[in-house]
Amino acid sequence: MACSTHLRLLLEIVKHGIDTSSYLLGLRSFRLNNIDLSIIIVNYKSWGVLQQCLDSFKQFPPKVSYEIIVVDNDSQDGKFNSFRQQFHEIKLIANKGNYGFSSGCNLGADNAHGEFLLFLNPDVTLTSSHAIEKMFSFAKANPNIGVTSCRTLNSNGKREREIAFLNPWLLIGWLRAMYKLVLSHKIAITFPENNEIWYPEWVAGSAILIQRDFFKKIGKWSENNFWMYSEDLDICIKSKNYGKKTALLRNVELKHSHGGSSRRNPKTTAITKSEVVTSSHVFIHLYTIGMNRLALHLVIMIYTLTSSLLRTIITLPFFWKGFFRTNLFTLVVIIKYYLSALIRLTWKSKRLKSSGS
Image (tube, rainbow, N blue to C red; front, side, top):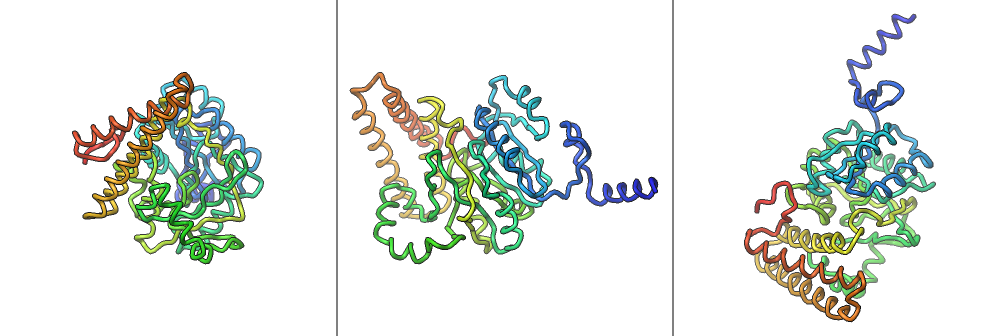
C-alpha cells in the first residue's frame, strides 16, 4: 500500500512539478504547481501597511488555492530579512533596484505558479465579502474577460472610481469632470447603478486579476514605459486589443487605505505627483498621433506648470507648513522633469531600468 501511494505521488510530481521554494520558505510540505492563484504585491518601504494586508489574508482566507509573492523594490531600509522571518509562508523576492511598479509586478509574475495572477497593492486589505475568490470564479467562468477587478473602498468607506475612460483627453481632471457632467445621462445608461458588474474601459492597478498565460501573451506590464501610474490603462488596452473586455465586480469589495510609500513625506509626495505627469505624457506618446498628440502634450504641460505654480504661490504664506513644502517640491520636480525630457528627447521617467526613447 505504501509503495502504491508513493508511486502515485511520484507520478503527480512528474506531471505537475514541485514548488520547492515553498518548502524552503518553511511550509509544512511540498506544494504542487497546479494552484489557482498567485497574489503578487510590490512593496517599497511600506512594511506597515503590507503587514496589515497579509494579516487580512489570515482573517479572511480566500477559498481557493493560492500563493503570495511579495517583491521588494530595493527598499534598502534593513527590514527585508526580519520581514522574511516574520512571514516565512510567503515568497519574498528582492528586486535589484526600484525600477517601478511594473518591473516589480513582472518579477513577481516570473516567479508565479498560479493559473491566474492577482496584482494587489500593499495598502489593500481583504474584507468579509470574499472578493478574491469571486473575482477568480468570475474570470475563470468568463474567458472573454481579460482583466477583472472589484469595488474598492477608501479609508473613509467611500467608493473609489468605478467608471473610467481611455480617451487621453480625459487624463485632464477638469475635462473629465465636464465630460461626466455633460454626458451624465448617457453614462448612467451605460453603467446602471443596480448592475453588479460593470465593464469600464480600464480599472485601477490596485487590484487586477488576469490569467497567467494571457498576461504573458499580451506582453506583461510595460516596465520599459511606465515607472508608476498609467500602466493600468496600458494593460487594459493590451487586453482590449486581443478582443477581451475589462470587468469590475461591484457586489464585493476590498479596502484601499492609500497608506503606502508614496505619501511618506513632502519630497516623496512630490516625486509621486511628478510621476503622474510623467506617465500621462508617456501614455499620450504611445497612444496618440499627429496634432492630437502635440495638443495633448502642450495642454497637459501648460496646465501642470500653471496649477503647480499657483498652488505654491497660494500656500506661500504658510511656508512653514508641510503642504507648502509639498507644493514647492512638486513644482521643482516637475520643472526638472520637463527640462530633462527636452534634453533626453523622451517623456519616460529617468527612474526606469531602461529609460531610452
